[in-house]
Amino acid sequence: MYSKQKKSCEKGFSLIELSIVLVIVGLLMSAGVGIMNSVSKTSKIAKEKANVAIIKNSLISYAFSHGRLPCPDTNGDGSENCPTSNCANPPCGLPFIDLSISSVNKDTWSLPYGYDVTDILTTTNSNSLCSILYQLNNLYSWYGNPANAPCGTNDLVCVTDTTDGDNGSISAAGQGYYLAAYTCSGGEDHVFGGKNSRDGRREYEMSSNPFDKTVNRDDLTGELSFGELSAKICNNKNTTVDVIMDSGMVWYSDNDGCLVADGLNRATVVLGQTIHYNNGSSDGCTGQIKFEDLAKCDANIVISNCAGGSSFDGTVNLTIP
Image (cartoon, rainbow, N blue to C red):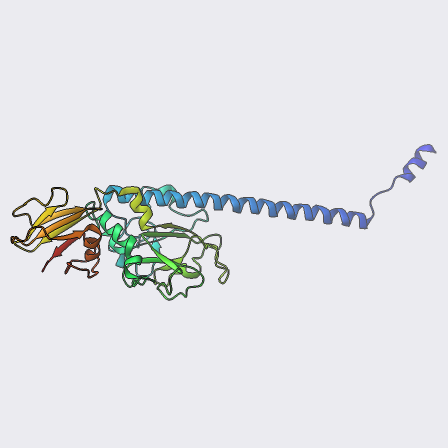
């Protein structure tokens, strides 16, 4: 009698109560999945930023060892394929084999990296690299605002912000700048978005503006500037311009008090140096020219007492009147 009464007093959950419990469990599971996805995405972004740093350091090391930057991978095998004109629709691939970074041959979403490089920096050598980096780093100020050097047109890689149109050039001062090299990851959507899309214009998105809301872009990018590369591998001694004078010209160093140096018609001028000259007559050491002016001359910028020069080869052929 007692046991039957006890049993009859036991109560179960109603359907409404069970529904509420299931809803709560579902919400908790959904929140847990969302948190896990967020943690996973944050982890991948952190790893991607580390990969971008590895790529940049590898590019700097390569330039230090070879006197140039590698060409892009256009065959999909991880090796460079020079010249850069082989890359018909940049950005092409990262030459991770040449950079000895096979561990980051793809981004954290298993997509190959995009890579582009200013052409001239793939043809330099240990003697000319630093002088050309000096010239490229000063092009903007030398040419004026903005620089008279559109992306791609002069084989320069550039990045621009959202206020600049996707027209293959920097449209106005402050809207962009030029780079030695550029890398990009397609991100979670596995697509190069915005200006990183393969349109061949060599104009890309700034790393400081990684998310272009107009196209819902989630690319992660890396920039190697002329100044940063120069600061890592260049100094006053290896930033030089070779000067070849016309026959009969005589060069004097600014360090020897303009003493006679008969027959010297070729000189290597280092960053910060000013050299003196005459044409072999008796008027003494009356002419002088600074390293910066020689570098401008090599960039084909006409200046006083400087005529001629082959652009960006580290050598200036001068004819002084």
